[in-house]
Length: 158
Image 1 (tube, rainbow, N blue to C red):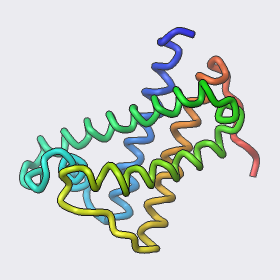
Image 2 (image 1 turned 135 degrees about the horizontal axis):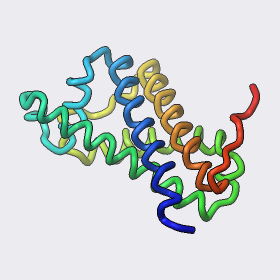
Image 3 (image 1 turned 120 degrees about the vertical axis):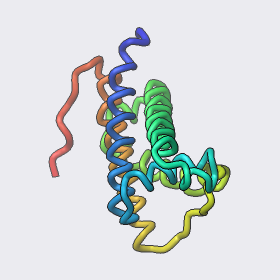
Image 4 (image 1 turned 135 degrees about the vertical axis):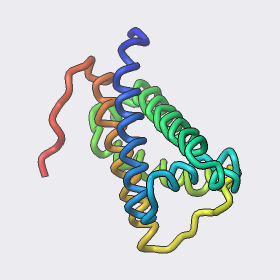
């Protein structure tokens, strides 16, 4: 299998999931995209990200997309080894979304320079978890192209 076969699904899944995630964060937190992107950049820059305007927001967008593409790469790599992930992309996406939620909130953000820590409040946590479920589904939707050799199956019927 050539590396080129992985590029399109990983980039599409990562960029689309990452972009939608920023939009979801805007809705959940009731902040403008600039502020959300600065919050992402604060993981590297600390509090100064919120005083750095557009350059910090641009860094935040690059970081968001880089993390999202990395998350897609990880899923595709694991899916090549675990056949069940290839067969059940929808369930895998939901499970991956839960894993992403916990890793981001309890490992990545606390270890970053971000000047805040995730707070566990039920309504907010549910909203964040729903956003990560969507994120996981987007990643697995595109990753299934690798698993099926480019052919994709329709989503499961409700």
